Image (cartoon, rainbow over all chains, first blue to last red; front, side, top):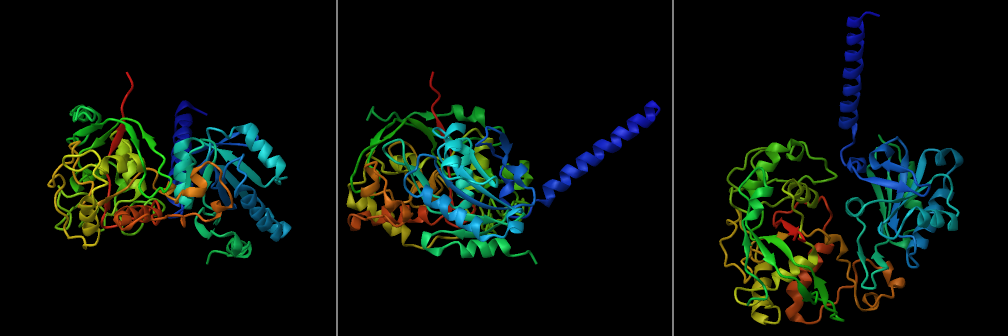
Length: 192
Length: 257
């Protein structure tokens, strides 16, 4: 390959890469939560960009914190009810994400302990981030939260969101009494 | 009077690359009791800076010009609903319903944060906003005065005018801050924390009451109805909501020397 060929080839390569990038940007569905640019760390200590989860999987998402004795165990158990309601085939295209509202106290160790104590399957990610990313995520999902005056515990709403494969929120499970069925139905609903 | 220095800071100009920055007022910290909290525990508020006026249409237009992804036609619906800047004539045109000096409204929480990040500011917290908003022209805390609250409540009950009057036209409060009341409602950074932390939870022993997110507001008396409306409003918001009476202003931490 001559030098000129080489230059042409690399130009071609870079313009393709660029076009691919631009396509990706515009491919983001309107209202997709993958428009958020925050970064997170999971229960294995791996860091990830939230946008990298725009991988075609549907997701069941909730927020809480590791030492929560209130609503969080219930939230996780309810998410597992959704998981158990799915067929093995369906499970392959769904992920379960639990995000901490308390990054100042939830490190990798706490996330791992939470995952273990709830016997979360390999389809689960438990994530902690930075305060700004946490706030934006909560606002996008519609989770209300506040630190309590004891400085340790949080008050936060019961909310389990269903995201379709494009990251668009298709259902919000807001009261425990509702049960898992509407979330499962939302997961199964195919885009027309 | 010395306690809350009236210093208006012109230094803010240095942080804004685009437009003549609104002067900020320095608010000396202290404690206050958040309206509607029955147990009335004082909350600390650190000293901070706050814009003396809300952000205007003209200022927001300059931001949109430099950041087209925040224009009406390009914004992601995740960040702003379909009412975003609806009172403007076009993407980059204000038109008759959006005078340059009137406060910008129909902006989402995300849009407000993006604008402020661009000028090295942030939204005030609920506590900061409420702390400054207790003041009238002569008192740092006028909240015990029924007339003060009646005036606010009376404004809440009136429909908004179109177009809105210019910012800074009303009398400044004792800190030199205009328009906290009687012009528009304003976004706060932690609006989604207003979930009615009440008696049972404020003592630090959370319990099953966590189940009921926004249901815990307890209004003490009729004079608190204005506060009740403001806190209720916040509870009802989502981050992408754009409302014709809801705008924002900037705040900033005071750099520790």
